[in-house]
Amino acid sequence: MPEPNGGRPTLEAVAARAGVSRATVSRVVNGGAGVREAVQERVRRAVQELGYVPNSAARTLVTRRTGAVAVVIAEPEARVFTDPFFGRQLRGISRELAAADTQLLLMFVEHRADYDRIGRYLAGGHVDGALMFSLHRDDPLPAMAERAGLPTVYGGRPGWVGADRAPRPLYVDTDNRDGARQAVRHLLERGRRRIAVITGPLDQTSALDRLDGYLDALGTSAPDPRLIADGGFTAEGGERAMATLLGTAPDLDAVFACSDLMANGALRTLRAHGRRVPDDVAVVGYDDLEPAAWADPPLTTVRQDVEEMGRLMARLLLRLLDTRRTGGGQGPGSAGDDGAEVAGGARVGGTDLEAGVEGLAAAAGLTPVITEARLVVREST
Image (cartoon, rainbow, N blue to C red):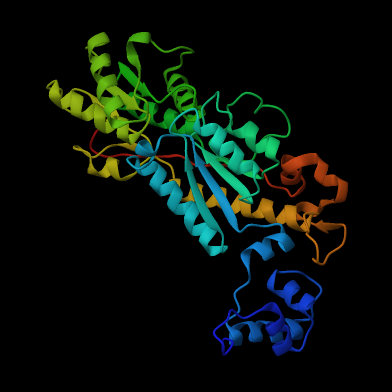
């Protein structure tokens, strides 16, 4: 039971109840090693009986962990909350972090000035690591995380300046290029010959990879300028892009839209121009999220498991944080030697930490993850 005077139970009270030292209680509560199982059980029972809750600030000093992770989305808030892609990815991230008793801090980039604010926060020791996605080519966020020494996992193949140096950043993505190839080959197999493409912003690797897959399937190295338009990964952008394409290539008989939102926008424009889908124009999207099934007609699309990608991002970051902690990031009062065995048989510790976050990931056997993309055929083709 809690202390009779109503005060918050202390570490000393737990130690007295369990018959151990304060240092032993601290070690058990903070996940340290070197305490016999029987003693750990006595401490855990005393914690439960007294209703003891560790002081988060003190725990941070001991473990050098805040118990929080920043999720940074390099997009305005309005876009994040209107695109189901971000909702699905955040759900996967949130569930994985919650299972690890880790808090999620969500940050957006509304204006260029936000980068300074986010950079200061990430460098200030407020979070243990970061998950970043929807990055653009000139995005300064990866460099900020690197300068801060902050463990980071990225959503999407890295495409920013400096991302191609070794070791490569840790990331999760889907096979965008192959998914686009599947989409366009499907249209070719259905007899379509004037196939347009609505891209996302080409300063993002997902959009570039999907455009490359479109070109692969057509067997060409460059798109016909009359058959390509940028839809910005939004429904409104898809509407505008489709109107542009109908003006430059009125004889087109198919369109590959590189997201379901853009495909839905394209369907609205086609309907407004009296074009029947799929009779006159076949349409394929990408993502297989709610807008694909809700579309009229339902969209043929390329499925990527967005929620699973979010879970994988969080899982990789948690493993990276554990590697850093056991490999030399121990704080005052923690138990352990100068290094620790990690995945793959590598040993990380002491001066090895100077290799940086990416070096830790490599030593721990952590590598980027590419998930499968799969065509889902519906009525729009």
